Image (cartoon, rainbow, N blue to C red; front, side, top):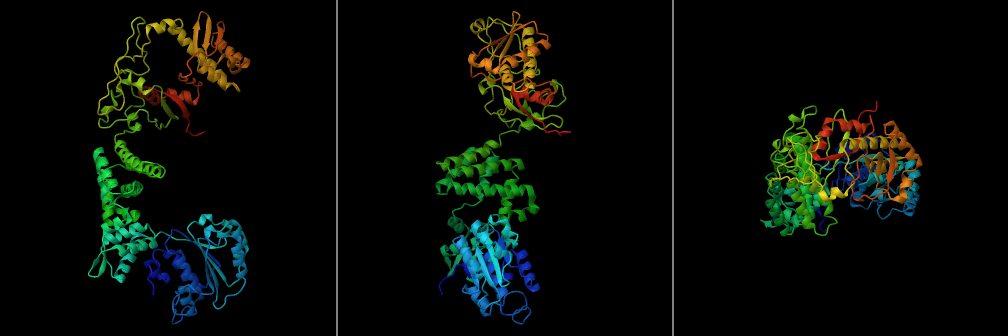
Length: 634
């Protein structure tokens, strides 16, 4: 007889031989014992876990010549000796028709099946149709089979095996009994492999068998296929093949997880050079970057689960050998749960990118370096927690680096803070990194007025010196007022006439009143945005509004109705005697847009008044762009 692979040679022939599917086998045996036979079954689940095998065993049990409880068949299990059982096991039974639905998926094939189903079986009690990969049958073909499934002849039983039950129409699933198969547990696969190794005369230690069981990934057939290949390549010892873990890893193209344990230890020690050295050795040995990324993702997932579950429940959740469980627990002890979660996200993204990147090696190395850099970041929430909500300015720490001197923070990260009595605010830096480096901060609150500046002699502030260790999380606030950059004397001389502080304050108040009135009006949002981005000045009895809108568009953006609303708002603000002058755009198009003034009593106004929001603006020199109110409506 020709050689049979292990998956076929040791295919279960009885319900009791099927590993890991007790919830299915017990139900079917009880149905056979009570003679509660359904006309349609759907077996769904992972590949290689026994769906088609159980369908064949059920077919043997239904057509077995010996009655349940007889001497040859004391249980609902098939007797395996009668003609029906032997023919079904050999695959040449006339009344058990196995159809590959992947190639017989059209409506014509299903019509032929439906017509043949009307005739009684040639010899056995039931005519059984086993449809493998049933999800590939077209919708039209399923519709043609629908009536037969709903009211079939009493001698017909349909069994459909599929890995994607959601692709089977609901009208079909509702007419059948659906059994969802489980992935086979590691202990069950390991037990089966150990028994097969003894029967085949193969010398294999627990480490090698555990590696084969893990490679199966819940599929008994996959584990047996890899074992078959490993036996063929194994060296002989006293005439018997010997399986070794290193030989199996080389066969599968994987590396030991001890390599990833070493990488995580280097990440914990902030040793980027060691991480790159280990990665370089793996890649130079011929390992695929995609395969290494896949293994790294699996190892990080095991570490995360070990961190969450702890030593007690890790064995059930991880489905890996005891040695690998201890390894995952050692790596998990180095990091927090949040850090492992970020590591897993980075490597998952790296693995996805390797599928369409040209230089896979570079992207894999970059993904590993990101793990080192992630440990240097300090959560923004931890920074904000150093500032008391109701505390005085003197209670603030002079430098955030005092709270966490060993880490740094990227100021361009989004500020995410949850306050019980305030909306959630997203902040965006108002200055470029170059401008931020030229800012000097004092220990007084950021809301203090800028120091007076001499117009004749420009004074440029010194740039902030950042230590090379990058341990400073944010610039310190000194005791003096904030110094703003000074404009050169020639530029100030060529600009518009100087405006007093009272006039500037008055212009800001008038602008706020006008923009707020336009925002409340209907269909005036465009005009409100234009006047909000404009430069307002009160000079010589005039309110001069320098807009960024061209001369051709100014009359359309700020139409007569909008101008009427603005004039009314100015009168209410006590500036009715001043003349309103709208100037077309001459300002730079690249100038940043100003933030629209918040409406009085609005959610945005309340957010701007909150101490934590003000401290965040002061710390990051940010402006409020979006306010989301998460409080209850009532």
